[in-house]
Image 1: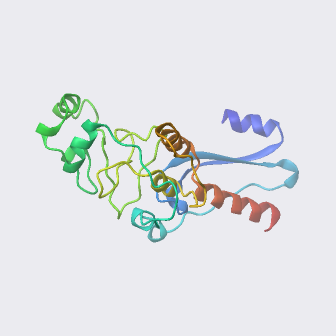
Image 2 (image 1 turned 30 degrees about the vertical axis):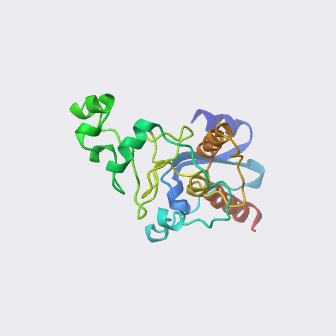
Image 3 (image 1 turned 90 degrees about the horizontal axis):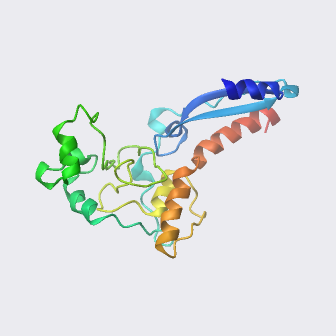
Length: 210
Protein backbone atom coordinates (compact mmCIF):
# COMPACT_ATOMS: atom_id res chain seq x y z
CA UNK A 1 0.00 0.00 0.00
CA UNK A 2 2.86 2.38 0.83
CA UNK A 3 4.67 1.67 -2.45
CA UNK A 4 1.42 2.01 -4.37
CA UNK A 5 0.67 5.36 -2.71
CA UNK A 6 4.17 6.65 -3.49
CA UNK A 7 3.80 5.68 -7.14
CA UNK A 8 0.37 7.32 -7.26
CA UNK A 9 1.98 10.57 -6.12
CA UNK A 10 4.55 10.21 -8.89
CA UNK A 11 1.78 10.06 -11.49
CA UNK A 12 1.13 6.34 -11.94
CA UNK A 13 -2.07 4.32 -11.74
CA UNK A 14 -0.95 1.16 -9.94
CA UNK A 15 -2.40 -2.34 -10.05
CA UNK A 16 -0.91 -5.11 -7.92
CA UNK A 17 -1.65 -8.76 -7.35
CA UNK A 18 -0.02 -11.95 -6.08
CA UNK A 19 0.49 -14.18 -9.12
CA UNK A 20 1.47 -17.84 -9.26
CA UNK A 21 3.89 -18.54 -12.13
CA UNK A 22 2.29 -21.97 -12.60
CA UNK A 23 -0.88 -20.21 -13.80
CA UNK A 24 1.05 -18.78 -16.76
CA UNK A 25 2.73 -21.83 -18.25
CA UNK A 26 5.70 -22.06 -15.90
CA UNK A 27 6.30 -25.59 -14.48
CA UNK A 28 6.77 -24.19 -10.99
CA UNK A 29 4.52 -23.03 -8.16
CA UNK A 30 6.04 -19.63 -7.45
CA UNK A 31 3.93 -16.88 -5.92
CA UNK A 32 5.17 -13.30 -6.17
CA UNK A 33 3.63 -9.86 -5.72
CA UNK A 34 3.62 -8.08 -9.08
CA UNK A 35 3.00 -4.33 -9.41
CA UNK A 36 2.30 -2.56 -12.69
CA UNK A 37 2.12 1.22 -12.92
CA UNK A 38 0.77 3.04 -15.98
CA UNK A 39 1.27 6.79 -16.36
CA UNK A 40 -1.88 8.69 -15.50
CA UNK A 41 -1.89 10.48 -18.87
CA UNK A 42 -2.53 7.12 -20.55
CA UNK A 43 -5.87 7.02 -18.71
CA UNK A 44 -5.74 3.24 -18.37
CA UNK A 45 -5.83 0.83 -15.45
CA UNK A 46 -3.87 -2.35 -16.02
CA UNK A 47 -5.71 -5.67 -15.79
CA UNK A 48 -3.60 -8.76 -15.11
CA UNK A 49 -3.85 -11.65 -17.61
CA UNK A 50 -6.20 -14.49 -16.74
CA UNK A 51 -4.65 -17.71 -15.42
CA UNK A 52 -4.41 -20.71 -17.72
CA UNK A 53 -6.83 -23.58 -17.08
CA UNK A 54 -5.33 -26.22 -14.81
CA UNK A 55 -5.32 -28.68 -17.71
CA UNK A 56 -2.87 -26.42 -19.59
CA UNK A 57 -0.38 -25.99 -16.75
CA UNK A 58 3.10 -27.34 -17.45
CA UNK A 59 4.11 -30.49 -15.58
CA UNK A 60 7.72 -31.47 -15.03
CA UNK A 61 7.60 -34.33 -17.53
CA UNK A 62 7.30 -31.82 -20.36
CA UNK A 63 10.49 -29.93 -19.55
CA UNK A 64 12.97 -32.54 -18.27
CA UNK A 65 13.51 -34.37 -21.56
CA UNK A 66 16.39 -32.23 -22.84
CA UNK A 67 18.33 -32.86 -26.09
CA UNK A 68 21.98 -33.75 -25.52
CA UNK A 69 23.28 -30.78 -27.52
CA UNK A 70 21.68 -28.20 -25.19
CA UNK A 71 24.29 -26.55 -22.98
CA UNK A 72 24.50 -26.35 -19.18
CA UNK A 73 23.62 -29.97 -18.47
CA UNK A 74 25.92 -30.11 -15.46
CA UNK A 75 24.90 -30.23 -11.81
CA UNK A 76 26.21 -29.19 -8.42
CA UNK A 77 27.04 -32.41 -6.50
CA UNK A 78 25.15 -32.98 -3.28
CA UNK A 79 26.87 -33.69 0.03
CA UNK A 80 27.67 -37.33 0.98
CA UNK A 81 25.01 -37.13 3.70
CA UNK A 82 22.35 -36.02 1.21
CA UNK A 83 23.41 -38.68 -1.26
CA UNK A 84 23.00 -41.38 1.39
CA UNK A 85 19.35 -40.39 1.86
CA UNK A 86 18.21 -39.95 -1.74
CA UNK A 87 17.81 -43.67 -2.59
CA UNK A 88 15.14 -43.87 0.13
CA UNK A 89 13.01 -41.04 -1.29
CA UNK A 90 10.54 -42.17 -3.98
CA UNK A 91 9.34 -40.03 -6.85
CA UNK A 92 6.84 -37.57 -5.41
CA UNK A 93 8.13 -38.14 -1.86
CA UNK A 94 10.23 -36.34 0.71
CA UNK A 95 12.41 -36.96 3.79
CA UNK A 96 9.34 -38.33 5.55
CA UNK A 97 9.67 -41.46 3.42
CA UNK A 98 13.21 -42.16 4.66
CA UNK A 99 13.33 -44.95 7.28
CA UNK A 100 14.21 -43.53 10.69
CA UNK A 101 17.50 -45.44 10.96
CA UNK A 102 18.85 -43.75 7.82
CA UNK A 103 18.20 -40.20 9.04
CA UNK A 104 21.04 -38.02 10.38
CA UNK A 105 20.70 -37.05 14.05
CA UNK A 106 19.40 -33.56 13.25
CA UNK A 107 16.51 -34.94 11.20
CA UNK A 108 15.80 -37.65 13.76
CA UNK A 109 15.27 -34.87 16.30
CA UNK A 110 12.71 -33.23 13.99
CA UNK A 111 11.01 -36.56 13.22
CA UNK A 112 10.67 -37.16 16.97
CA UNK A 113 8.60 -33.98 17.37
CA UNK A 114 6.89 -33.20 14.07
CA UNK A 115 4.34 -30.82 15.62
CA UNK A 116 7.05 -28.62 17.09
CA UNK A 117 8.78 -28.26 13.72
CA UNK A 118 5.56 -27.94 11.69
CA UNK A 119 6.43 -31.08 9.66
CA UNK A 120 8.80 -29.41 7.15
CA UNK A 121 9.04 -30.70 3.58
CA UNK A 122 12.79 -31.37 3.52
CA UNK A 123 14.26 -33.22 0.56
CA UNK A 124 11.14 -32.92 -1.58
CA UNK A 125 11.41 -34.96 -4.78
CA UNK A 126 8.61 -33.77 -7.04
CA UNK A 127 6.99 -36.25 -9.42
CA UNK A 128 7.17 -35.83 -13.18
CA UNK A 129 3.37 -35.58 -13.05
CA UNK A 130 3.58 -32.56 -10.72
CA UNK A 131 4.46 -28.90 -11.04
CA UNK A 132 7.70 -28.19 -9.20
CA UNK A 133 7.81 -26.18 -6.00
CA UNK A 134 9.57 -22.82 -5.76
CA UNK A 135 13.22 -22.96 -6.79
CA UNK A 136 15.34 -20.86 -4.43
CA UNK A 137 18.71 -19.21 -4.98
CA UNK A 138 20.40 -21.51 -2.46
CA UNK A 139 19.36 -24.63 -4.43
CA UNK A 140 19.50 -26.73 -1.28
CA UNK A 141 17.35 -29.88 -0.94
CA UNK A 142 16.29 -28.79 2.54
CA UNK A 143 14.50 -25.66 1.35
CA UNK A 144 13.33 -26.29 -2.20
CA UNK A 145 12.44 -29.10 -4.60
CA UNK A 146 15.84 -29.34 -6.26
CA UNK A 147 16.09 -33.17 -6.45
CA UNK A 148 15.52 -34.86 -9.80
CA UNK A 149 12.34 -37.00 -9.88
CA UNK A 150 14.05 -40.29 -10.70
CA UNK A 151 17.82 -39.71 -10.61
CA UNK A 152 19.73 -39.37 -7.34
CA UNK A 153 21.15 -35.90 -7.91
CA UNK A 154 20.38 -32.21 -7.90
CA UNK A 155 18.70 -30.80 -11.02
CA UNK A 156 21.19 -29.68 -13.67
CA UNK A 157 21.58 -25.99 -14.42
CA UNK A 158 19.56 -26.45 -17.60
CA UNK A 159 16.78 -28.34 -15.82
CA UNK A 160 16.48 -25.57 -13.23
CA UNK A 161 16.54 -22.99 -16.03
CA UNK A 162 13.69 -24.80 -17.78
CA UNK A 163 11.72 -24.94 -14.53
CA UNK A 164 12.17 -21.16 -14.42
CA UNK A 165 11.12 -21.08 -18.13
CA UNK A 166 14.42 -19.76 -19.49
CA UNK A 167 14.88 -20.55 -23.20
CA UNK A 168 17.53 -23.15 -24.06
CA UNK A 169 19.62 -20.59 -25.96
CA UNK A 170 20.16 -18.56 -22.77
CA UNK A 171 23.59 -19.86 -21.72
CA UNK A 172 25.08 -19.81 -18.20
CA UNK A 173 28.74 -20.04 -17.20
CA UNK A 174 29.57 -23.51 -15.90
CA UNK A 175 33.28 -24.23 -16.45
CA UNK A 176 34.02 -24.65 -12.73
CA UNK A 177 32.19 -25.28 -9.45
CA UNK A 178 32.09 -21.58 -8.52
CA UNK A 179 30.36 -20.69 -11.78
CA UNK A 180 27.98 -23.65 -11.44
CA UNK A 181 26.89 -22.59 -7.94
CA UNK A 182 26.54 -18.98 -9.13
CA UNK A 183 24.30 -20.10 -12.00
CA UNK A 184 21.88 -21.78 -9.58
CA UNK A 185 21.76 -18.54 -7.59
CA UNK A 186 21.11 -16.38 -10.66
CA UNK A 187 18.33 -18.67 -11.88
CA UNK A 188 16.76 -19.02 -8.42
CA UNK A 189 16.61 -15.25 -7.97
CA UNK A 190 15.03 -14.62 -11.38
CA UNK A 191 11.46 -13.80 -12.28
CA UNK A 192 10.24 -16.74 -14.41
CA UNK A 193 10.51 -15.74 -18.06
CA UNK A 194 7.08 -17.18 -18.85
CA UNK A 195 5.42 -15.03 -16.19
CA UNK A 196 7.27 -11.89 -17.30
CA UNK A 197 6.31 -12.62 -20.90
CA UNK A 198 2.61 -13.01 -20.05
CA UNK A 199 2.59 -9.66 -18.24
CA UNK A 200 4.58 -7.90 -20.97
CA UNK A 201 2.21 -9.14 -23.68
CA UNK A 202 -0.77 -7.88 -21.68
CA UNK A 203 0.86 -4.45 -21.29
CA UNK A 204 1.54 -4.26 -25.04
CA UNK A 205 -2.05 -5.17 -25.81
CA UNK A 206 -3.73 -2.94 -23.24
CA UNK A 207 -1.49 0.12 -23.66
CA UNK A 208 -0.27 -0.07 -27.26
CA UNK A 209 -2.94 -2.31 -28.84
CA UNK A 210 -0.25 -4.64 -30.15
